[in-house]
Image (tube, rainbow, N blue to C red; front, side, top):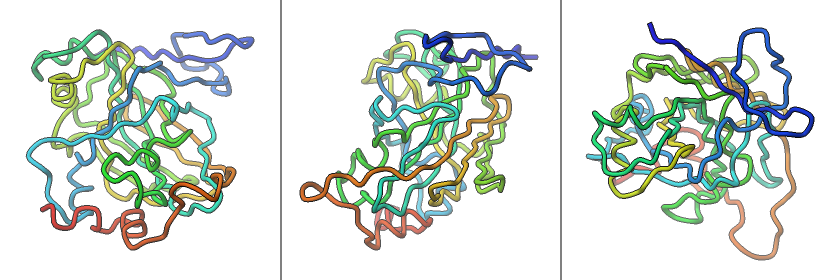
Length: 269
């Protein structure tokens, strides 16, 4: 039987401290992201239920996007939906954390380069989906849109584990790592073919079906078997400075993608 150890980063008297977490410790502690990555990389599609929802087919190999480190958030943190936006979607998933410099390895070797796992919520601000084509920089990279936590768990076997997202206590996503086309070791090795991964780097491994918009005031929880529960709440933020740059839209692509339609993948099957 695997021995699981959880490490959390919390603030103690204003200082960031890493502690080995145990049952009964103060869940109300002010949490920080459990790791400090140099980069955050996320896979587009991986769970079969999500593929079926979009009525598409998986590509021959995974495709990815990047979330800047300025999007990092933590367990208990507020996720900001800017004024004028309507389509802020949750995406509960497992986050892989790299443990040592990793480049040019095979999937069979990848486990030796993984420090452990945490929970991620790959929030997307789909109101900006008509901009930054391909990169999804504003959609997935805006401030607060990458909560991780509550802790980094070592010794965890990713196989056959449940992933659930709840909004205000109601289950809205219910998946399992068994439905992933590409497992954690494959994803790490695939990225490391051409991109060197450093200790603390994070790979988000994909979300099950039923990503949908949430509203200010909602509480979103992602629970992964063996990793615990990541909890965040949605707040309303300031409007992006108007008068220049791309503005939020409510196009057919925006609405279709936010509500689970097939717009994003039309013509790619």
